Length: 132
Image (tube, rainbow, N blue to C red; front, side, top):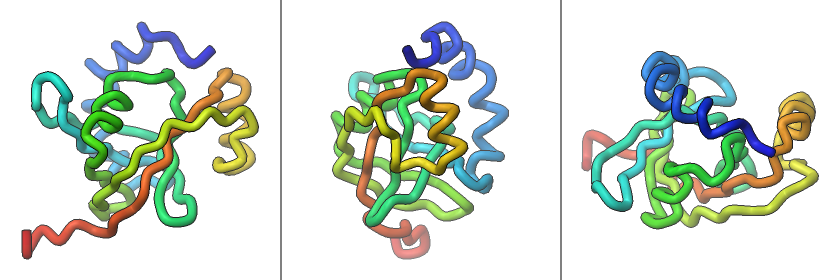
């Protein structure tokens, strides 16, 4: 069982505001910039992110939350990680009991938490803010 939804609500209202500036630069972290599927509002959600092949993977530590639904509905978003903004696309929610996509120590923690899903996305490259 992933982390409780009450903890997710607390993080969304309190912790995320503190973590977002740090997550933009910290290894293994990032900020997902996505649009609400109903409201159209722009949201910035701190996430744990790991590179894989041609993209990134996110462990679903809280299960299929709003940011997952927003990302899959839109099919695209931006990810700020290690100080660089990337366009991401093609979100794919994957059932993954082995969690081999993630580093060993992270995998151990995720297994203890009962995490069995991840989202894989394609990295479409850095966003060029000067040219648009």
